Image (tube, rainbow, N blue to C red):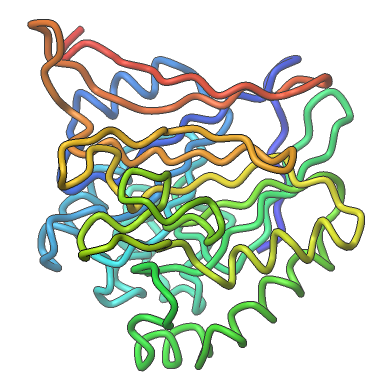
Length: 292
């Protein structure tokens, strides 16, 4: 998909909702709508590991009226056509969508191996959506599914697809993904470090890291990489950084799981806001009350 999403004013505001794992309901729909974002991005893992829970979350997300992109996570390997139709059913779309499940007519759509253009005060930025369904690590996960659904048979083919998206993109670049790139640390509490194997290890995506490096080698400005997947609270009880800057690129992990939780005696709902102006960009964690 190649679309243009303009800013509604002098600031482009994008709401970034981390891995849901079923933590999304009518209150979220109402609260997010009230914030008036120009675009929403969901990092994936909608359900709790079952097709029914994933589809139930998709139906709730479909109630949104803002433009929204949903990156399928490793928990979202349900029938991609069914998932795409569920996300668009509120708009009355009943056609079977293309491989990536996208439709310009719908407010909410899946993304992956796709390009989306935003403009703020004449500043042009390309959002490049990376590999869907990533589980992280050094191998292509769900290889049969990826081959059938996206025509991707290896990480090398995925890297080639991402490079082609970079070649076709205009302006500055922000990458959107489910999992982040390799190269940012292998300790269990690093931003995409492995916390579930002895000795840890870097669990980032090699194809995404290669795409970032390729873009920079071509003289392109990469502003940020936005992803989730590796939960901010590790299995050892440590807290990952949710934001890190490296080589002039801002990396954001929005996967605060569960995203609805208690703190200081209150229950809050978590997401991240990205604000882009003609001069720069800023990420801020947002905690909304349990009810309003």
